[in-house]
Amino acid sequence: MSTQVYAAIDIGGTKIAGALIDDSGGIRERTELPTPARESTSRLTGTVDAVIDTLAAHPSWAAVRGIGIASAGPVDTGRGTVSPVNIPAWRSFPLVESVRAHPLVPEGTEPVLLGDAVAMAAAEHWRGAARGVRNALCMVVSTGVGGGYVLDGELHPGPSGNAGHIGHISVDMDGPPCACGARGCVEGYASGTAIARHAVRTGWTPPRGQEATAAAVAVAAAAGDERALAAFDRSARALAAAIAGSATLLEIEVAVIGGGVAQAGDILFTPLRRHLRSFAVLDFARHVAVRPAALARDAGLVGAAAAARRHVLDGGAPVAAR
Image 1 (spheres, one colour):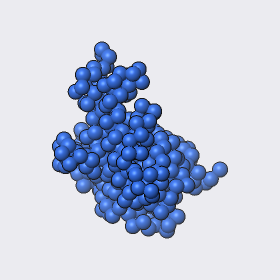
Image 2 (cartoon, rainbow, N blue to C red):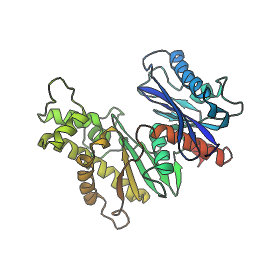
Image 3 (cartoon, helix red, strand yellow):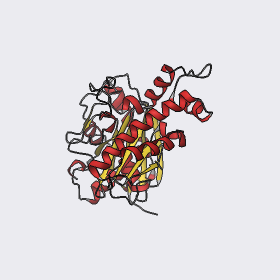
Image 4 (tube, one colour):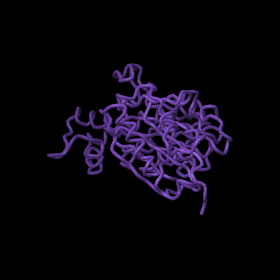
């Protein structure tokens, strides 16, 4: 068994998780706490510190060679700051500096920061559905839509760490306004929120006592409800347009789809592959494959560890420079 271990922290709007992950991608220790998303900066920082405290109590902590942090964004990897949309108290918060200053983090350790969707790409390329692929797009389709790229065999987070924000490219110039300020964004059609909203708008209602969610729409779609099926078809069409655009621009070979919406399985993937054939029509783009993500709950942690591992193997080069 490998003796090289990487600490990973995954920060989202509902949970702050931590893990110790070995050089083969195996999780030796895992912990998580609820995110106090609406509370103070000090309360949030204290929760991150408590996760590190738990990891540091494990015997494998002594073998930690690096620390990776995956965070909801936007992030700024150059400055080491985060401004998660769903964590209001953190705006340009110096997360890397805060983790580095924890008394149990070994002196000289430089945490590596990346966005949560980029972390998913790192995880799937290291140990998941994009393993061995040189050019891939990995997408998280959940409450929002995000993504990350692997290009020429390397993670491509971009100068600020935000490359791959595919949920905010327009697939309809006359489409509905998006919270980002643009119109017709992929997220407005393909996210779980958008799926549920469209299904309700067309007359679908969730079972009594249940909320209108993408998961509930998926159950109805599996039972043959035409309105539910149409909502997933609309989502799949937007995703197909985005994937085809990426294939045309970057010659990706594989698109990996994860997140809660992907749990619908063939309800999503069958129309997605059908629509992709009508959008990816150029010879060099039409063979892009669509795969479900292999890593689910722990993708952010595995991806953070992968980035820390790459950072160490590269002799400490900044992740945004590669």
